[in-house]
Every structure is written in structure tokens, then in C-alpha cells.
Amino acid sequence: MADPAGRQPNLVAVPKPLDLLRDATVWKAALYFPLTSVLGLGWFVILAAGVPLAAATTIIWVGLLVWALLLVLLRGGSILDRRLIGAAFGTRIPDPYRQLPQGSLTAKGKTILGDPATWKDLAFQIIRIPLAFGYFVGSMVLWALTAALILAPVGGQINEGFVPEFGNYEPRIDSWYDGLPYTLLGIVLLIVVLYVVKAVGVAHVALAKLLLGPSEKQALVARTTQLQASRARGVDAAEAERRRIERDLHDGAQQRLLGVAMDIGRARAKIDSDPEQARELIAQAHDGARAAIAELRDLARGIYPAILTDRGLEAALSALAGRCPVPVRISVDLPERPPAAVESIAYFTVAEALTNVAKHAGAAQAAVEARREGDVVVVEIRDDGRGGAALAPGGGLAGLADRAATIDGTLAVDSPAGGPTVVRAILPCSW
Image (cartoon, rainbow, N blue to C red; front, side, top):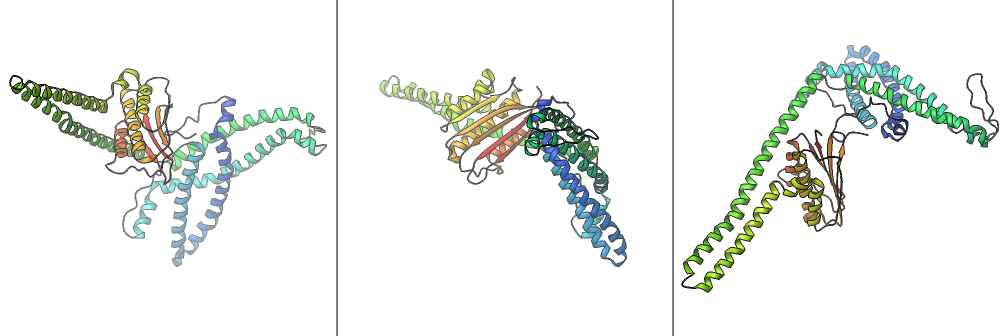
């Protein structure tokens, strides 16, 4: 299963047989190897026919077009391989190519030819050709033998004298119960085959990361760029939060407290001459003070809610759900409390999402789930509303994405027209 944070799953860990049977990644890898065998055969045909043709026709300029076509196919095929490896093994391999310059096709061609990633792509496709043959033969033999053993009782019922051959040993299976021992053997072989698939998958992914992935220098540059962007977004988010707090204090509680002070001053001036009006002014000041306290409480909750500090994320999310006019189901599966920064971002992500659900989604119900996956906390908010939510610049969801970026987290929104809407935050966490 692919890691939602984009980290690579631990393919090296040796799982238990039952875990292996339930591991979708292993089954997807079993389908991947026959597919990559077909692609390897395709590359054998392309390279065996295309390279001689291009070399022979270069002198009449036609070969230049063939070379260009081969480069396009090489890059496109390698990008496809990265995507297939990501889908099968859950390992994301970024494209390592240099940015193409603006200008003529000649300049672009020189950049592609001078890019080490191009030649690493070629090396991968050449190495993959013999590997593809081995993957195909191995897959066909192992899976056919496994299927024959597991289905031995069925073969015995359908065709009396069904015989799976093992060299010179030819057992007779004349009835379904004669095939049961072979079914058990087939199940054992199935487990062995899955272990083989996993082991070969580890080696194949390592080869792909070496030849199709970015170099260590490229990875460091990309990571540095990502951290710089995250830091800038974090600074912007903090500044926006500061301005919001300042605006709320100035336009809300400060104005109310000023009104309270004025009412009390007028009451003091009239307490002897007009006690009745003074009492009204004092009552008005009292109401203003209560409203100011409520606004300050809301402002404090917007900075960091007390319930989150005292009782943790599950209680805080339950409080949010209780205030939402749409029915909300809460599910929190965290074995221990994450750090305060992670809890805070998770809380405000849910708060903003539920506010959007109540105001804009037209939803009948919503669900909030917070769970631990490896070294990240995943927070998902789903609703069955009309959809159409987006990370628009300056919007509330974009602000949440900036807040998540401060701890190198991500926020994604999947909200097609007509719904449903899923807001997913992935927050790295050091437990």
C-alpha cells in the first residue's frame, strides 16, 4: 500500500505469511511483472529496429527525426515505468529531468542529450530487456504450477486421471479427495511464490530508484527547495494569523470594552442625579462586558483551544462536531497524543472543513477520521455535499495548507462537482 505521505514503504521487512496474503502491494507486484515483461519486449523491438534505422538514415537527415522519436519514446516510456512502479509497489520515484529551455527544438534536444537522466533511462530499458524475459518465464511457470496444485481436486472431478507432472513422477488423481494433498502443497507453494514476488520486487525497485530516480545531489536540491517553500509559507501563515488576531481584537473585544468604559463613566455621572438611568447604564455595561468576554473566549479558542490542551484531540474534535449543524461522525485512532503542533493543525483543519460543510456544502452528513499511519497523522474530513471545494489562493483551505506546510505536512482536497468532498491532511509526526 502506498504511503500517503509520499514516503517509501518498508519493502525489506519480512512479513508473516498471513500478512503477506493480505498485502495488496504483493498482489499488485504479481500483476506488474507480466506487464513489465511485455514492456521489455516492446523496448527490445524499439531498440533493435529503431537504433540501426536511425544510424543508417542519419546521413540523409531522416535519421535525425528517428533519433528524436526514440528520445521522446525513451522519456515517455521511463515516465510510464515510474508511474507503474508507484502503483504496484507504493514507491514514488520523482522525475529527475532537467528543465527544458525556452526556444528552438535544437536547444531542447541538446538539453535532453546532455541530461544524465536520459542515459540512465536508456540503461534501465536495456537492462530491463533480459530481466523481462526472466520475469515472464518465472511468473508463468510458478503461477501455473501453483494453480495446477491448488485446483487438483477440481481437475480430478472434471477429468478422471488428471495428472500434474513432476519430472518422472506422475501421480494419479482419480477423484477430488485424491487431489486434496496437492491443494495443501499448492497453498504452501503460493506462500513461497509471494515471498519470491516480494523479494524480486525489492530488487526491482532498488534498480529502478538507482537508474530512474534522481541522484543524491538532485534529491538534496529538491528537498532544500521544498523546505524553503515550506518555511516561506509558514512565515506567511504566521503573519496572516497575527493580523487576524490584531483585527479581531481591534474590531471586536476592544470596541466592546471601550463601550463598557463609556457606559460606566456615564453611570457614575448620573448615579446621584438620575439613579434609574444609572442602573440602566450599568446593566448595559454588564451586557457589554459579557459580550466582550465571549469574544475573547472565542478568540482564545481560535488561537489554541483549552479543551485541546486539557483533553486531547478526540475530545476537541468531538466538541467541534457537537457545534456543527450537520451530523458528524468522529473516529480517532491514535495510540498516543501527537505533539502540540500536530494536534493544533489537525484541530484547525477539521474546524475549517466543518465550517465549510455547514456553510457551503449542503451536506446531509459528514465524517472526521484521524489515524496514525507509520510516522504521520492522517486527518480526513468527508461530506456528501455538492462538492466544488478547492485550494483557492487566499481561501481558508489554502491557509490550512500553509499551516500544514510549517511542519512539512500536506493538505489535499478532492471535491468533484456533485461531491463527495474529501479533505485530507498528512502531518509528519515524531512519536
